[in-house]
Length: 393
Ligand code: APR
Ligand code: PHB
Image (cartoon, rainbow, N blue to C red):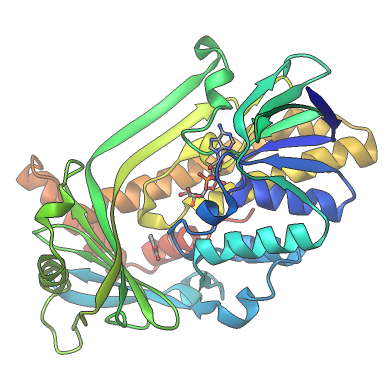
């Protein structure tokens, strides 16, 4: 068994683990990331693409925003399409000057990996059977194997940044986990296509046939989603059926045209809200999707992982620089406060935009009235905009 040591052992090289390692290194705190997949696999996952200003600021602090500054697209508004009737929401006006940046999470992950490795950071890809141990003692350790060699990584703290299906949360006794969960009766069929999006801003469409989202991956790709059954068989959805349905749900106004192109990726995303409390178990800390899941409607998954990481990096900095446990002791409550506000917005935006089969006529009318009220009330627009551009980290 080869034994090494670091200050923070991080499980997972997704956005959460990578950003934590970057922020720690910038403050002279050592870490090692143990990632189960290969670098190629991690750098090819298709994920969402809307960054809040807090996430952009963190990328700057992590010195990983060089491509974002060139390729990122600032969006000051978005559109809602209600049964084909389109209305624009001026995010900048109603959020006191804020906006969002369109930049693929795939690109963000690549930028964080390249920056960290170039700075001498340590990421162990293809680490097998990663196990957090002794995290209820002062000597936590991670064990894993690679190329048939067994390793032990001694550390002061373990950061579980290994996503919803990772090992970290599963190692905590279920009696100590307070789980809050909602599974939605629908999913999203997502495509990545070589065709321009129907508009230069995102369009969230609600229609009697279901929800649709029209997004983009600048400069030449479109990223679109269709509400579907969680048990959808992709074989039943050939390309032409997807394009036809996207056009129907967008409506047939003159400026509503969905260009068809080669579909590079096709997949089904289930919809879930999930939070586990607390986020700290001894010297094991959960962050990102390991701790919570939001439905993708509000584009909050990545951004919520980033606010967790800012708080966790602050906590470790407080410990190592000020010899204080205050940040560490407050991490869970501080992160959960913003997590729950974001869970609320993601649930609300999902609920008002997705029609369900067993929805009563009253529920359907309330849903449409929520949208009508949103578009007719400055107070409602301000509330929507401050949540969509991102609550303060
Ligand atoms: N051992 C080591 N690594 C693991 C293990 C394990 N047992 N289980 C999972 N991992 C790795 C995964 O391969 C992945 O690279 O942990 C990483 C977790 O990354 P994400 O799932 O991306 O989670 P997170 O970093 O919290 O980012 C959240 O990513 O999935 C999206 O919608 C999500 O946008 C949100 C963001
Ligand atoms: C995306 O571009 O993938 C995207 C954008 C906005 C969302 C969800 C996904 O709400």
